[in-house]
Length: 612
View 1 (cartoon, rainbow, N blue to C red):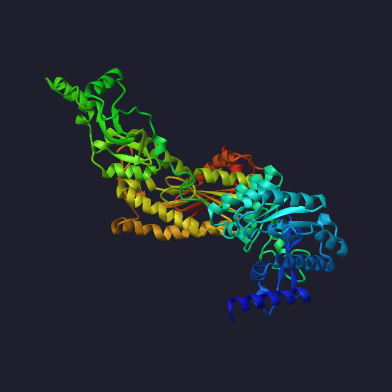
View 2 (cartoon, rainbow, N blue to C red):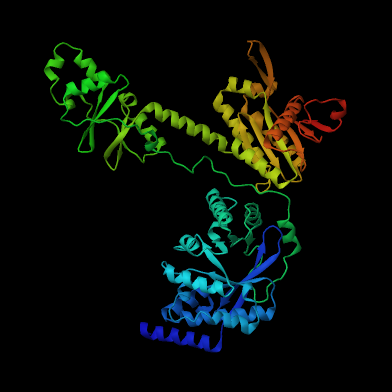
């Protein structure tokens, strides 16, 4: 069959579909994320089941190829509206409309309204959902079409935000009442900090613009709860319900209960602050350059007139060719007759003609490695910074070290570089989320006993191995979708339990740590159950093998007001745990902030202790 014959066959098949109305509407519920209430349905379409055009993608692709998009789309709308009315489905109907069909000059803009009146649906219940399939629009014409639909009582939604070619501009141009986030950014959001940030950003824009967000493609419990916790208004996806010819009108009880859980999800974290990559431009200092024609006497005067000036770059027609250092020039001119001999010669005579040159976009970590690998004098001379090969300024090693040090400090606040567990900032943020949500949770402050003398005797590398072991044990005995594990620093860790079996998990943590820790000692120390080392006063002291102390604080809604109060109370629970010999669990069951600051005999009766 030739290409023309094949096109004729497809066109005839489309005409048959239109003539015999061989399309089937399906409806997928859209729910309110905070309550589980079904607020409406998206109308979807399927072609004949015995045809490649059963898929809507193939159906509309064929319609475009045959210049029949308007006819096919209008039939889809009509059949969907008729079935929606026949089923008497509650809430709103999200009706898919392609922007290119809206702006066709021969489109009768009143046809959809006419269908609606025929089937008896209030136009205010119909959402025109714009689904893009082409990269460009006539925005002026589109705005006019949207204005026309709004004047008839319709509300506008944008489908697949973030997936198409121009959906963000479309949002800005037509200011829809709803935006639907493409499923790519929803699926796996509980494991991907970039997707989390994208959805969070869209939600923030939507709140400021008065737009309601719908998350598409929700398929798991974790995705459902993450979307809910981000404040997204509505959701749809296979986890909620699949598209069906006779869809549900209320959510199953277990799904409503899941959405109403008084808990918070665990945000995925990065093993560093990857949001901003600092580059050499951060180190840029404005240092006046000289051309190769400038004489050495002039350069000498520049150094002499400015005691803080250490380096002068030499630049020819914008391209750096060398560096002149104060020490080199002044040292040479201090020698007899050298100034008289060379003062009027080109400054290139005493310049370093192989300077270290880097582009402004070079990452600081990469620049640091370049300097380490280069000759030693570059560490003192500094480096030239260019933009596409042209001189723009200088940088020095001191500023580079300061920035890298600050980057490491900041990164450690967000993720501990040793265990890669979240650091202090995400710990505090998660506690604040739990408090704001009014969740019941348990704070478990974890600390290792006899760890500092172990570090002294076995060295910090062995100590790091023990800390990594501890991080793995804690993470391995927590529910990754409910429990948050963080590394405060050193041998201090924290678990924020939402799992109801937290006490059993704590016992397993102690058992596994107790079984694993002897493997980090020598045979001699294992047999003796410890070792002798000097304390800070130089006194010989026997230290047992390292043990783990867990101080646990139960938190009820309204009991604490901030992560600062939680930190203070949890630290006190840890102190109580460390008073118990061996692997220990101290559970503080008292109510109110700072409950263990002044323990007495009555208080002790309200706390549980266990030593293993």
